[in-house]
Image 1 (cartoon, protein in one colour):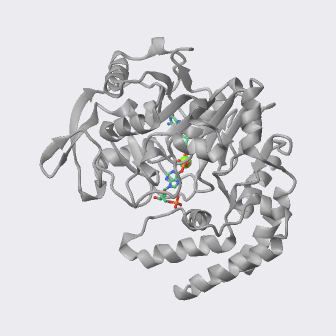
Image 2 (cartoon, helix red, strand yellow; image 1 turned 45 degrees about the vertical axis):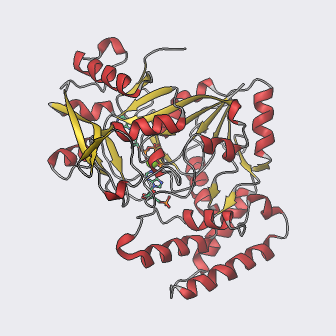
Image 3 (cartoon, rainbow, N blue to C red; image 1 turned 135 degrees about the horizontal axis):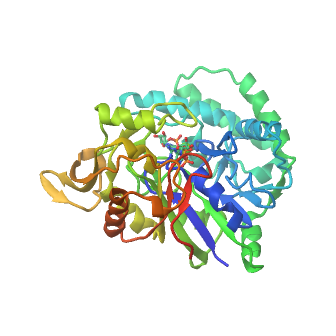
Length: 422
Ligand code: GDP
Ligand code: IMO
Ligand code: MG
């Protein structure tokens, strides 16, 4: 068997959590491969709403194993909060969730470093989620990190050494802080983690594949936030693209199967950085209002704009997307016309190639399509789609050269239309 990968093609928050939950019945194992609690994946079903940060979105479907892979960075304190919230709501987790020994730990001081680096950047700050993601990956790459497996061996000593190093750096930044409460919550989190099995996840996943099990890898963030291919430096610190599933799980490239690329019918971004199709007018405001575009983790208003096909084509290419999934189609129900950016003007020259540095300015070139002005939220099958909506789908499929398999018409699990089965 091969690992299917589901990942975001825009700047995150495409609706990955919802669709992973919908697809989970077809899989045995669901696994996260990168990112950490900077993610906020929302799931809605049977009148409940959950936001997951580190735990894979397959956790609500019984009989499935969820794995936090080696490429993930994990904050024990936030992890405990997530576990507690799920267990209060009656979802048993101990047997369903396993954690890679090689996943890196976000230490309490990583969060402080994140804040210190951001404030030192002043105007040029990234607008991170403040969860210590960058500093933790920095320590991983510079070979100073602590991993989940370290908890089991001589941990106090390794922890104290790492914290002392961080304190030195914080001193250089004149950063004031009080670690006491943070550390208390963090160590309670470590105790909570010990209830779960720490595994050699690369063996676990590969053995699962060998024995015919189906594995779904759940991306976090989105392609435009990828450390290599996103709008650098306004990106996150991991490889959010499909290749990240290989390194973040220990799966060989030839063992990747379907690549599900997920995008909104429009586009959003949280935090700083370039966003060519961003709208600053009432149209953008309307998208934010209808789409409830406020960060699942930070509550920050999301910046909104039209769909950007230059960026999407680039994302389809980098990830080798085999199936597309379009989310939040219903948010466009109210619009008379829908715009799609098909090219950029860079230095006055039109191009449809994603440029080296989006920060240097890219003016969107739009085509306009008629809106459908129909409430789609209760639709159950594509037979009910309005003509204009079908035309929008066809236009996108022609532009992106990949079929759209799933259309989402609302936040609930049930508001999902699978256009065809393979
Ligand atoms: P993720 O990070 O990719 O999992 O996405 P988020 O959960 O951060 O953001 C997606 C938001 O849109 C959540 O509030 C979802 O409940 C909501 N959502 C998902 N699909 C749809 C949809 O088709 N229509 C509408 N209106 N909301 C949706
Ligand atoms: P999900 O998985 C949207 C953004 C932050 C910031 C930049 C760097 O829910 O789609 P970081 O804390 O990672 O160092 O922040 O990346 N960002 C996200 N934006 N969705 C996310 O995750 C994000 N995770 C990080 O806003 O601009
Ligand atoms: Mg999110």
